[in-house]
Length: 355
Image (cartoon, rainbow, N blue to C red; front, side, top):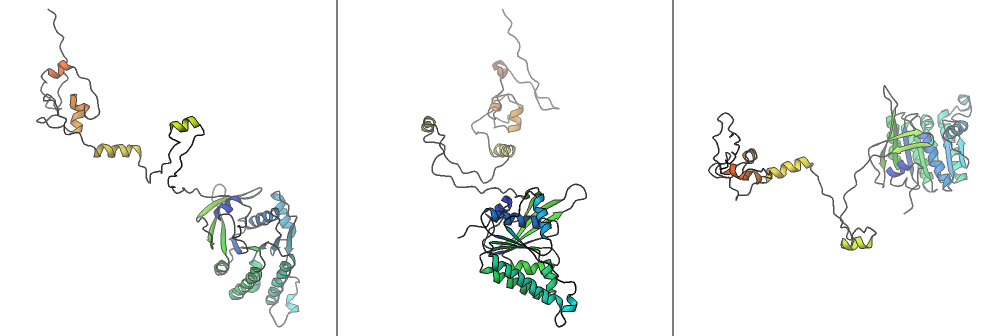
C-alpha cells in the first residue's frame, strides 16, 4: 500500500493518520477567509519539497495575488506551476454566440484548457481554487455534477492527488461535491462579540481512513495553518511479559530481573469515597467485649462505632483509636451518667495518702 500524501500541516496529518490517500480527489470547503488557499499552498509546497510536481489552477485570484499571499508567510512558489484562467476571455460574449448560451460554450472551453495543462505537466498534486466560477458557468446542478464527474474520471488514471476548494454558495451544490469527493475537510471561522475569532476544522468524511472526528481548533499564523488536535485518552494495554529494567545490573538482580508491568485499573474511585466505602463495609470483630463499667456497653455486647469512639475504654481501641486510660480509673466505679447529655463525667484518680 502506498504511503499517504502529507499535507504539510503536522496537526492535520495527525488527524488524517498520516495524510491524504494517494491519487484521490478531496474537497476543502469553507467560507471566504477561513484559510482554504493557505492550506492549498502548504499542500503544494510540501509536494515540492518531496520532489513532486504541483499545479495551482486559480479561477478567482490572479497569480500576483497568490505570490503576495505566499510572501506574507515567507514562502516561495518557485517550482509550482500557477495556471491563471480568466472566467471571461472577452466582454462581448453575447455578440459572439447566438445559438448557444455563452456560459455553456465558456464552461466547455474552461474545462478543456484545464485538461490540456494537466496533460502537458503531468503533476502529482493539483489544486483548483476555486470551483465557484465553474458552478456559475454550469448554471444547473445536474450539469455541474457531470462536469465534476468528468474531471474526476480524467484525473483517475493520471496518478495525482487533487484538492478542490469551494465556498459555501449553496447547500445543494455542496452535497454534490461531497458525494463525488473521496474526503471532505470543512473549515470554519466563528466570530465573537469581544475578542478574537475562533477557527476550527472538521473532517466530514474520509473513505478508508479512520480519521479523528469532531471539531479541531486551528489558527493562521506566519508560516501557515497550525492545527491543535483534541487530546484523546489512550486505551489501556495488556501487561507485558518482559520486566522493566533499570539499567543497573545489581538493582535488577535485587528486583528479580526488573519491575513487573501492571495493567491500570478500569476505574479509580476518589480516596475519600474509597475510605468511606471501606469503613461502611467493615464490621468490628465479634470477639471484642466492652468492659462492664463502659457507658457505651449494653449487657456486655459489642458497642456501636459511634458509642465506642465516644467512650474511653478498651473497646475504643478495637476501632482503631488508641486512648490511654489510667489502670486505677478503670477499676474505679464509674459515676452515673448525666441524664441530660448521657455521658459520664471524667473522674480524676485520687492520690494515695502516704502513711
